[in-house]
Length: 377
Image (tube, rainbow, N blue to C red):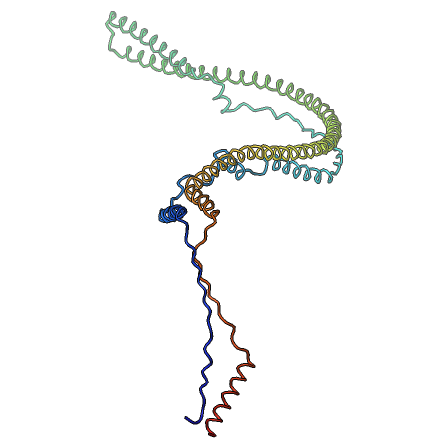
């Protein structure tokens, strides 16, 4: 072979040492027992905890939470704000007070009515028809009927006399009947005329009496009206003067009342402001009292919840101890066995240190010299 040499590195030397320790026979059953029990415990399924872990809110806490959520601004705050607002507006309006000017009422002269008497009424056909008796014609008709009856009686007597004398139906009787009828007609006309004339005269006399009485009454009424006007004028002037004085007094009293009302309004505004502050303080005190009460009730409810939570935690800790009790026993058992002076089989391997770089370089040089000698020989 000529040319390149073998570059395989030299084989490394390995030193291996194995040490074996066997368990004593008296200890073997205990170790095997703990291994078997540990294996059995590892196969046991997980046991969940079925109890309650967290103590929820109690009914008292829920009621308190609801009450806290429903808390609102105290009603006294709104009333106090309204009082303060109203008092402020009233005070602003009171500051604009302006006195009322006193108006002097002028007294006017009373109105004097002029009175006069009307002229005397004249008697005429209208007055005659008004004053004549509505029964005059009935009276005249009665008189006419009596006249006719008298004429008939006279004719009957004459007829009987003519019949006795044997002249009934003759010219003499005819003339007498004609004269009797003429006299009867004239008598009836006279009765009608006298009756109407008498009624007319009575009507005129009654009219004159009424006119005279009316004239007297008119004079009396005129005098009474003038006296009444005079009294009314005096009374009116006196009443006007009294009204003027009363009006001035009323204006002064009204102005004093307005001033007093303004002062009372200002005092009322101050009281309203004080009442508003009192209501606000009462509302704040009530709110603080409610919060303090809710805090104390909440603390009491929290103590009950904390007690229940400790009970749940204790129950869960007891469950864990009961569940892990076999493993705790195995652990204590294992700790006891670890205290026995026995060991397990162990195997140790030791490697020789590799050659240094200088030794490797020297080996390479020796190899090259050998190859040179082989090629030259």
